[in-house]
Image (cartoon, rainbow, N blue to C red):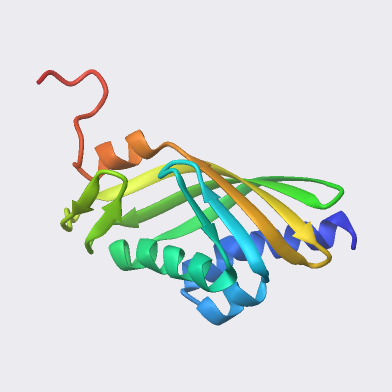
Length: 147
């Protein structure tokens, strides 16, 4: 498959998440797809489990979505540079526990490395700054703040 086609499919990760179209999102994945969410240290196996994990993010920030600013493709891999935005208007469950809704808006830059098997996504490695995210929603002090 042409790298341009794989790049478009990889972009659909962001498009379908933003739209909350979980059927279309799941259709992008192989049944045994892996999602490695480096910021939370979660590694999730299986298309249904990946969808469930991302639904958790959407429940915590119902208006959340992403914008892809750059892409790079080589062979069966695509890299995306993404800016995620959303208001934490729902409960967020993360590595530090459960965080009640803060009503605060966040903008978090990220990179995603996507590996394909044919025209389906086999692996997603999602890198983002969890400290910046948690600081923006008020779950931890900002860098340089006095205690």
